[in-house]
Image (cartoon, rainbow, N blue to C red; front, side):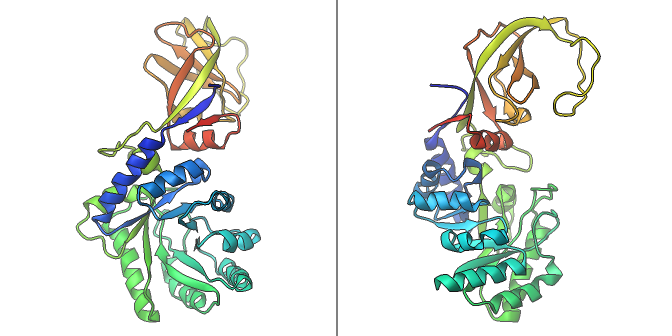
Length: 351
C-alpha cells in the first residue's frame, strides 16, 4: 500500500461507539455522533449506526450532502450555525441545525416554506466558553421570534464548552442550561425534545454527576474515534485509542549535525527556531508535512523523536538505529492531526 496513509479500524470505532451509547443510555442521554473529523465518511457513519446511534452531526453541509447521497439512514444535524449563503442546502439536506442568529433562522424559514417541509432548530446558549451561543438574557426574545416563524420547529436548546477556551462542563453550568430549559418551556408553553449538554468534554460529568437535570443529549466525536475524554485526554476505560494509525515513508536517512550553521532568521512559517547541540545525530526525513498533518499532533513510536517539519517534510531523529529509505513509520494521531490527515488529498485513507 502507498504512503502516507491513514489506516482506519472500523471495528474499533464501532466498538467505541457501542460502549458509549450503552453507558449514556443508562443515564438517559442519547448520542449524536459527529462526523466532521472524518469528512462525512460513509463507512464510519455506518459504524455509528450499527452501534445504535440514530443521529449524526457535522459542521459542514457538504459532508451531510455526501452522506445523504451515500444513502446513510440517520437523522442529520448541521452543528455549526448555517451560513446565509447555504440556507437552501441546509433545508435540503439537514433535518436540523444548531443556530445562534435570528437572521439565519428567518432565512431558513423562507427556504423551508418553499419546500413545504418544516426544519428543526436548536438554539445554542453561551455559558462561558465564548465560542458560539446566544447570551442567556437574550434567549427569551430569540425563542419568541423563532416560535413565530413558519416552517421552523424549535426542537430545543444546547450549549458548547471546552472548545475555544477550555471551560469545563460541571454541575454549575449544566444546571444553568437545565434551568433555562425549564424557564423557557414554562414561559412559552412548549416542550423541548432536545437539551444538548455539549461534546466529549461532558463525559466525566455525564457519568459522574448525581443530577443530570434536563440534559438528554451529547454530541460525541473524539471520544468515539480516539477513545479519549477531552478535558485531559485520558483514555476512556474499555475503549480503543488506536482506531487510526498514520503510516509514513522515509525518503532520506543520513548522519547530520544537530545544529544548523550560518546566520539564523525565521523559517518558512515565521518561527525563530532554537537548537541544542547534540553533535552528529541519525536524522531521517519522512514524506509528509504541515500541508497534510499537524506535526505537534502525532505521537511517534519508541526510539523516534520528531525534531522538525516543513510544508512537505517531517524530520525525525532515530535514537537507536538508522531508518533506511523506504521504511514505514507508524504514528498515533490526535484529533487535530486526524482532521488534517482526513482533509489532505495526499494522505490515502485505508478502511
